[in-house]
Length: 96
Image (cartoon, rainbow, N blue to C red):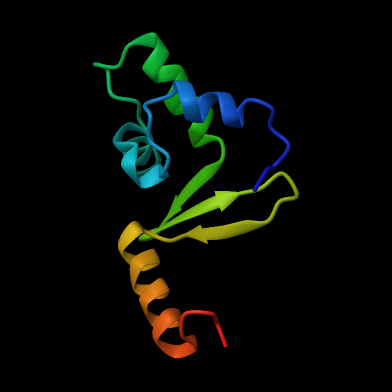
């Protein structure tokens, strides 16, 4: 989904290569701790700060913040897999 940020597609291709936010350890660490690790290069630091604006860590949940002030829980890859298995098992291959 597009939240109107023209840099989204560019950052996904040029950032760390992570297509799933949970694969971007630096951003997750920053959201959890609130500090950027000293060892990061200026480019890595900019990447972390850019992506962290879109997310919030609350309790044990990662939330995606949208431009319209909506917040949605970001499922972990494991939660996504479990959800897909459950829906597939309940609804079958074609969702019928």
